[in-house]
Image 1 (cartoon, one colour):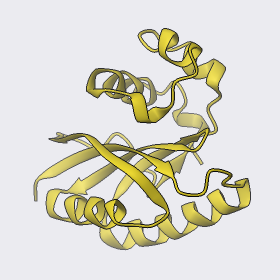
Image 2 (image 1 turned 180 degrees about the horizontal axis):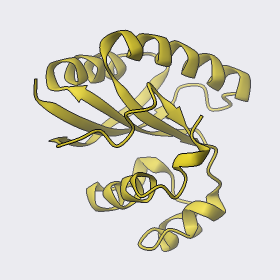
Image 3 (image 1 turned 90 degrees about the horizontal axis):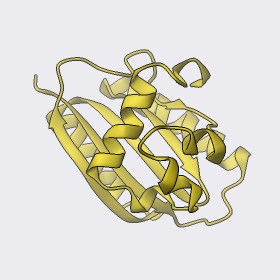
Length: 145
């Protein structure tokens, strides 16, 4: 097994995704991911998603392909797909944090990005890794549900 993480961003096809709809989506993802050995985390803000998927390369790649054609997503953009030595989110089949725009703006290296109201869709590889590192280091890990 080759352990990888895939970081991608997408736009919600439903621009007004309600908290209840997001919770339903998370419940489905958690159930499916548990059976497939996938862990990770999801951020949702202003109609855009930032997601990290961790697991066996073949399983992660197959899941990403499925997400890529899912009608609930548009503009699905793979930012990073690379081998990892250990899971950052091993305790969560799909952790979700309700991190605020203000909290995102406090992350060194991202403050200018989020202060200007940018969406996850505009993150490049460097900023995606900075955001991932903030969560891996535990800054909001305790808030993942």
